[in-house]
Amino acid sequence: MPVPRPADAQHIDSLYREHHGWLQQWLRRKLGSSSDAADLAQDTFLRVLGKPQVLAEVREPRAWLTRIAQGLVVDKVRRDEVERACLEAIAHLPAPEVISPEARMLLVEALATIDAMLEGLGAKPREAFLMSRLDDLGYAEIARRMGVSLSSVEKYMAAAIRHCYLMRQAWQAS
Amino acid sequence: MPSALPDPVLEQAIAWLVQLRAQPSGVAPDPALQARIDAWRAADGRHESVWSELMASEAQFQRLVALPVAPAQWQQPLSALNRSRSRRQSRRRWLGGVALGLGSVALAGLAARQAGLFDSLDGQRYATGTGDQRRVTLGDGTQLALNTATAVQLQFDADQRLITLERGEIFIDTGRDAISPRHRPFLVQTAQARLQALGTRFAVRQQAGVTRLSLLEGRVAVDTGQGTRTVIVPGETVEIDAGGNLRRQATAAAAMDPTAWLDGTLVTRDMRLGDVVAEMARYRHGWLYCEDGVASLKVSGVFQLRDGEAALESLAQALPVRIEQRTRFWVRVTALNSR
Image (cartoon, rainbow over all chains, first blue to last red; front, side, top):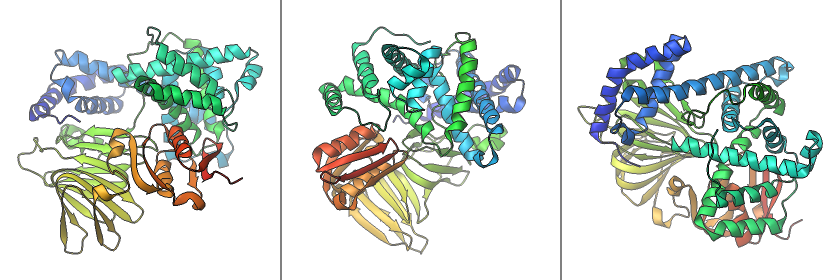
């Protein structure tokens, strides 16, 4: 693990002083909420802290910061959407099924991750893949339920696995 | 949407995985298929690395399935999301994957937001779930690595840098504290002791009733709150129990390499199978158990932590045991000839 030099710490410090206020304004315009904007501005700088080696080479700090912040906005929108879907589902369940706030947080996190990973995958591969991985069904049963051939299910699986792999690569490269 | 040139290794790995998962998890995969996959993975380093990437995606689904909530809790939201996604598919562009929700930073220190960046890291908590690992660089330059199922709380102020290890295992490479005008002491608090790092690299693990410390570089002073301080030197591993007793041992003589997890591996030397299985269980959801009859068999080897199934499989190949797997989350290591 690279140890940041003292110069990096100064870099981050001056980056924070010069751009934090501006970034927070930018986020507030996007999100319409100042507390969300403050949270995401903070998260953006936390991410910057994790990339000291990149920091020294940044020429356009505001463009770079907004690119990171934009990603966090997309993430937050997704999370809010997933959380809303969870709350709606919970509202329809009998009382004993209601889960603790901690378990719900984990649930939202896990669902948001999966949702992000499957983003852009076609509806049929997505459906088939979720039946396999979450409902633990075999391909024959999936083919029966979807009314398609076994070889179609195999194609859907391959497409979904390939998609998840490429999404992970894209994520790791960023 | 991501795209790439066709990659023959990736396509082969996908083809194997498609075949491997044709049946529900209750049905054991064809041993001949499994053997062919194992041989393919072992044939080339890149085969193995692509395969473990596929397994990392699979782990995200296992993480959801293993949550202590009724399947209805996730099935309904997922199908709702499924509907809304197919309506708007392709409208939203993938933004370079900048911020997938993988990994979890719980931000607790936001109250100090206005006071400046580094101050706001005080009071922060970092945590990992089962099977996850995480590395962070702290404001003072310290590198902190969290192993599976770990939680720490940070209190960095003008006088000290204190990390409280609530559970799990961490590795620390202390920074020079460049942002503070003077050198602040670096402390790790566990349930059994307070450890003071004196410019150093070390691993700390919190187990039930025991703290285990392994030192790679520098010095660490151990204070058990009973008026004595013991200084530990590199190459030493100490265990501190609730009574404040220290058991010192050469790390090289230990049955397990205490920092191999940083490379994603479990490295054992004549370690009891029962302990090896307990160690593997730390990285997976569900129930993994070793039968008493085989628990004292000795195991030496290197196991990949990211691929728990392969690790178990290699135990079955090396020892007279078999892996009884009722579901992905109920696994027992048992004698080869038991029913």
